[in-house]
Amino acid sequence: MRYIKLRDLEVSRIGLGAMGMSHGYTGSGTDDAESVRTVHRALELGVTLVDTAEIYGPYTNEELLGRALKGRRDQVVLATKFGLVSHGGEGAWNPDSSPANIRTAVEGSLKRLGTDHIDLYYQHRVDPGTPIEETAGAVRELIEEGKVRAFGLSEAGPDTIRRAHAVQPVTAVQSEYSLFTRGVEERVLPVLRELNIGLVPFSPLGRGVLTGTVRSTDQFDETDFRRGNPRFTGENFRRNLALADEVRALADEAGATPGQVALAWLLSRGDDIAPIPGTKRVARVEENTAADAVTLTAGQLERLTALPPAAGATHTEAQARLLER
Ligand SMILES: NC(=O)c1ccc[n+]([C@@H]2O[C@H](COP(=O)([O-])OP(=O)(O)OC[C@H]3O[C@@H](n4cnc5c(N)ncnc54)[C@H](OP(=O)(O)O)[C@@H]3O)[C@@H](O)[C@H]2O)c1
Image (cartoon, rainbow, N blue to C red; front, side, top):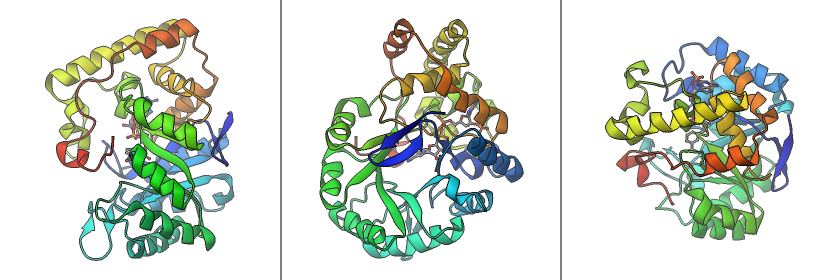
């Protein structure tokens, strides 16, 4: 495994997204023992960046990681997120990045994760009700107190990134980025490079579609949130499966799996980019991590870059209101 720096934070080039172990996708929460083995296998393979959030579950994903990392805490750069649980009464899925809410959130996350510090603490979504300077100031205090090592934002736009960075330097922005979702390239990535901020692409496998293993939404549990996602419905889904077929054809040529090709393409976009593919299975973490060693030719990379992005919005309308793009 190779390692890169997100600003001054060293991480494995390929991380591990833990969300699906407890939340959102088919089979979440059904086999915690395999999820724990997946975390351990990732660490053995040199993965250091492990990603969770307070809202995943809520809480159960952090609890799972707390158990998985017992005795191994020092091997990981542990990233979690605040700001989608309002502890003042409104509860989960209510944006609240007020300083008081962050203070409450951090104590809960530290406890569940079984640690005295969070390596990378992201605001999960920009909170329209709290000036970003106040949020950044609250995280700055947590850094001064040693509870947090570095500050991150998620799905923040250029203006928010600049304003936050002026108060507390931002180490990484986590946003959706993949062969399917290129939005960050135009406005966000140039600002990150100007300010020396790393990019952590989430859903780098197109929520599973780019691996070629998702062929029908009949494969999904009733509660799988992809069922309501515009990219997984009707004509959009049909077009996205055709795109995944193109990735598969190129992968066959390259002697890699489609998921590995999707990850290798992301890695080729820069040394300041560390994707966090999500899986709850040992065999898949082995496959995904091995993408670090996949080399694509310049011609193959060009063909991938020339593919159109996926059809359909990345989020439902309600979810999209919190994205700054
Ligand atoms: N900041 C944010 O707002 C935000 C939003 C979404 C996600 N995230 C983070 O980003 C991480 C990754 O994103 P994601 O989980 O949404 O999407 P993803 O990594 O694009 O895809 C995950 C899906 O692909 C499947 N999968 C993974 N590896 C596979 C392989 N080699 N072959 C076949 N299928 C494979 C997984 O199923 P199995 O688990 O069954 O293997 C899961 O259903 C999350 O875990 C989370 O930490 C952050």
